[in-house]
Length: 264
Image 1 (spheres, helix red, strand yellow):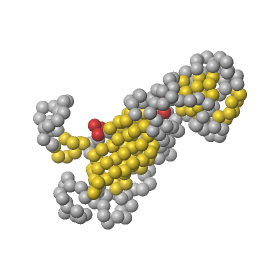
Image 2: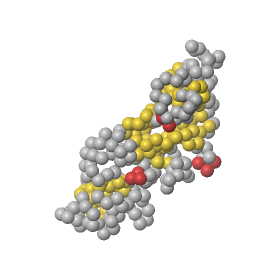
Image 3: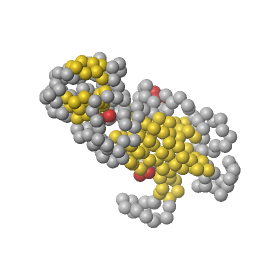
Image 4: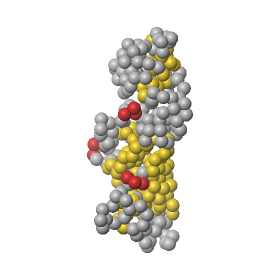
């Protein structure tokens, strides 16, 4: 195996690559759109010398991306509970505090998702009668801004992440098409971990027909999956505004993404 920055065989790597990032409010897309929209900033996962400032970088390969939730389904605790006993109480909410609505029909404006846990995500702080606050999604002039998690305290809703590729820019502009969609991957409900290998692009060179070949058509070559990155490329990851996370606050509990591979 070569140990310099030149004269290497195509599949050899010079040194290992491992990068990681935490994703919370780095939201992307919305309304069924996977693209990065204006004002959105996904999290940087891998930087293959986008500034072209390193003499020791000839590109690389990422063959593994995994995403792990920061929360593992532990029971949620509510700062305030709305039930038949507490209706009409005066409360004050700061960002991050949670309200549990125990049944429908208790608030003057129906809560957006019905029974469940609502975490306040708006600014500034709000106060008022607990039944008069609008337990909504995205904050606006007429809505307070809440992230709904689930009806049960220990349930983990599904959450989708989208991976993007950029080239030779440190300030990608969505309107210029700088963010190219590579794949989207969902952590299913009540699951804490997902491996993105099955949705990554196929590599150029086929491998011997061994292992799981289910689903391959006749004479279809079995290929590994990975992402080739030339010098100047970057990978970004964002949480899709969708479902219960259709809010600028994104995935409040957070998740860690880990990329592994090697430098060529």
